[in-house]
Length: 144
Image (cartoon, rainbow, N blue to C red; front, top):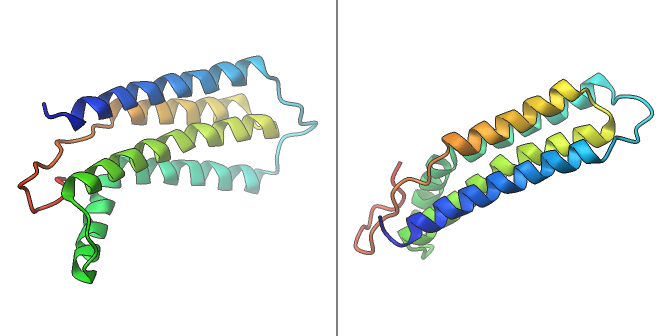
């Protein structure tokens, strides 16, 4: 294991703990909404949450393509920086799914939908892997 890889694993566990704290807050703080949100708004928020989750799980592929585009434009970024940025972005996108669950809870959405988004974000973090970081002499960039 290289030096950045344990850092990403530690961050993964920190993000899992933060989602568990979101769940705790959601359980402890009741929703003050007098009625549930309109169904189209609830559906849009759920779809946005799941889209963020999908983008987080595919962040390395997205950033690999972006890195190729930046290389063609002459932007200077090391492969290790691209790897680190892609993984931080992935963790943030996966956690945003849990934040959408908190928002839905505060809006008075059903507990099933809130639990579904929390479950999806936790499952996404559990199956997410940072991949192997590129070495200093690897000109290829992010490995898929």
